[in-house]
Image 1 (spheres, rainbow, N blue to C red):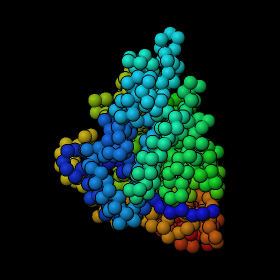
Image 2: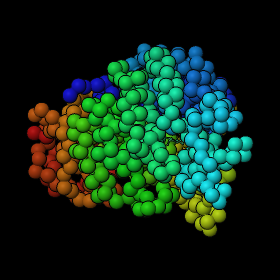
Image 3: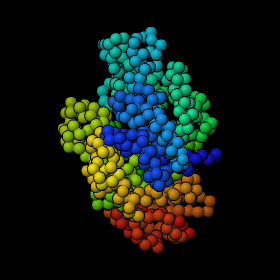
Image 4: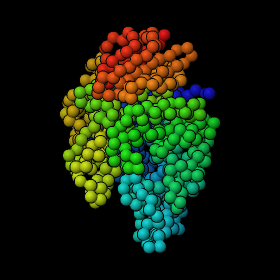
Length: 540
Ligand code: GLC
């Protein structure tokens, strides 16, 4: 099998609005990212996935794009963007752009034209349908952001489809002109020297709305193969598709090299484990660690050579992992490091979301007026109407709301955590005086240095990148696995709980590779792991 740079690297996701503000307007920007490239180089990452920086009215914080080839003025200029690509490249870091082509903004020139009427040459760039017989929406497809996925257009007396907000009309990928225009746009970005694309909700582009098919539609893979051939195909770029419903079989369809589609996908099976079956993400249930282990084992073993995994706990849509499944109180440091070790020793390309390397936590709110995220706000209104109590809704928001991940980066102890000299667009977590990059960098035992070491270990040890994976049978709340490559074997052990846990193995330690505390490790026989204890040892 051919090897690629993106299999050996670690990616860092930047959410530009909240990363670093260089000009005091309270909004992070591209020059701010450039200021922090040395920090990212020190961490050791090989690529940045940059959430959207394109022109956008910001109905969904940039995931509603009005011009794919202009930069949002709040973030800077195209020249800044080119400088960022160049400066990152000088530090061995490639820029992976967010490609949001399931939909555009309703302010994109194509949609402005399309709305002019059925005869307009851009009409078919989007998905229109006549009202149902009763005059209502064509069918009961729902938007991810609550309510109907159809919006009525007075002018033409037709509905258009929006699987997200009504300011995010869905593109019609069945129209070859849409594909040609998008591929040309992608090629212009590739020519600027970017390292790849993260493809937003890409499994939706094959939709057949009249049959109520949204994800994994019949022509999805044909479109992606065509995209591959007409754009990045022979360029060895990192391409990662966001695919919420992927199973291993589906993931192989996207990422089997022989099929010439994408390099890998983000699958979310593990991420759904604290959600009630048949419920929405807001319908909570506690995580069962045994289930988590089964899911990881499945993904680690089933792709084989016919696909590639991405590994992540966090992104801009998910709550902070240390608050979600770790312990953001007493064991914050210990659990943040344990979760990092668990993830980064597996096979696949790891992604770190900004602030994860500092152990940043969720930020609870006490009133909906403190929320900024459209998904959260729409859900709040919808559930109030349905009769849920405010308390119950806020409880879900604090556990799962997207603003948790979107609070500004905590750089230092100065006002606003060094994120901005102005008023931040969204308030910081008040704990920035205790949790910040400056403090982490000054402490050799910090979470930051655990991440740094994990990244370095991956660079130095093909075993982590290519080795086989075997899950061991342990206590429910202990996860342990062996990676093996050529004649080497490494054992990974994590206590995924706030309690002591037993662990025992007849294997013999050759040397300690990494651990999240200073306990002396000599024998693996009848151990009592302390809460969140985690270590990796090379076996004899
Ligand atoms: C993806 C993005 C999310 C966005 C949605 C619509 O899920 O990650 O932030 O709201 O797509 O573009």
